[in-house]
Amino acid sequence: MNWKDLKPDDGYFAAVNIAGEVSAKLVFGLYAGGKFMKSKTIRGYQWPTGRQIGSLKRDLIFWEGVAEFMNAGGRLVDVLADIRDGVADVSPDDKLVFPGWTYFDTGVNQEGNRVHEFISNDNDIHPVRFVRWVRNEFVDYKLTEADMVEADNYVRYVGIREATDAGDLGGKGTTTERQASELAN
Image (cartoon, rainbow, N blue to C red; front, top):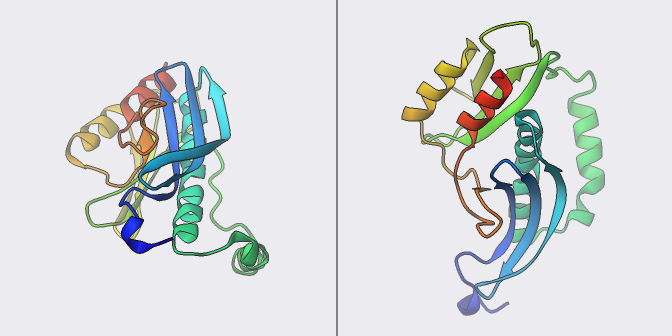
């Protein structure tokens, strides 16, 4: 590709497309020449639950990495064995497993640190409990839905790449409040 023809939005992308309460999909696609070329649905749900949307957002972290690796000229075929062997060598005992918790939301804060949010699987605890882990900063646990909404009012995540409708494949937004109320009911 000629650099002068490259548009700022060109390249591979990953996004979670949420169409209200009807569907949620994790997609991987390509823009070239300033135009949408194609996308592939990696996984999707009809009438998704908050936990299903959370699993799509967790997988989005991986697919965004794939997109940026490919945008940098990398070829996945060249690193697949390295990924398998590297993960096996570094994490032989699965030290970061969170039994009783489901991934809920993700983002990057203004300082550039990844934010991981989890929701408790224990339906007998009311109000529902959440954990917010901001890498390299802090871990908040025993958070309630109200705590999550309050924090979302003053913490702006950047670079989430979550679309609110099918026409906004590279859009930004959050469904944290909707997910929290769905899961609490």
